Length: 251
Image 1 (cartoon, helix red, strand yellow):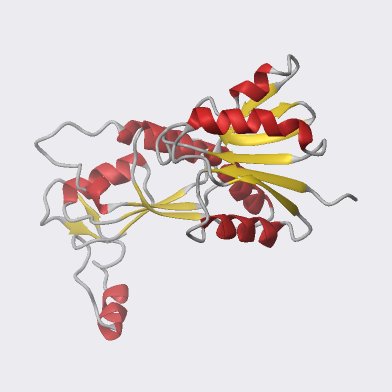
Image 2 (cartoon, helix red, strand yellow):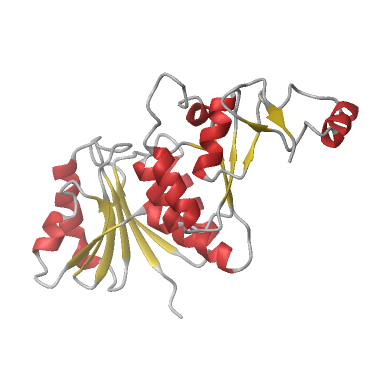
């Protein structure tokens, strides 16, 4: 099997270790890779200059090469990363015009958006399919997060204290209550709510289908001996809440 050829074009310069770090990361995953340094001297964030040199260099690269081009004023923003198949090579770069001249030279070129979230979900779901139980800590609930939970096979999530704090008697029930209730009815997901401090919060969480909770409503922090006593107390771990904080009973 031929060794993969990876060509690099960046505006990183060579005064710091970033080019070397990038190569090290690649070699840790693909030790047989061969590198071609097209240039690392593109002026900082000069996308048009980088696109010019990339288009001029491509014909000299072996067919099948992977070309990684990084000249990106929008790094760290919502700007999308792309994979471009063109001229018998594969190009990886930002969606900012850097790859456009290469794409224009090949009427049969095809571009794809890299979705890091999708890649991560696929890896997690693969682990889950092999018997690994996945748990997500400090979960914030919103429309986006609830949609994410339906796409990944988590066994358990822990709701962040900030989520529980949204349950207040003088405010309408937050929108995530209905979404969480629907999710739990259609899945085997287990949920732990953090920061439960009132019977009102406990009641609403129980109505939403949350199976477990922790917080000062149930107990202050305990020593090992104190926890043993608490565990065996009829009004301890099985305590439920009505509207009246003073009315508690055991299951």
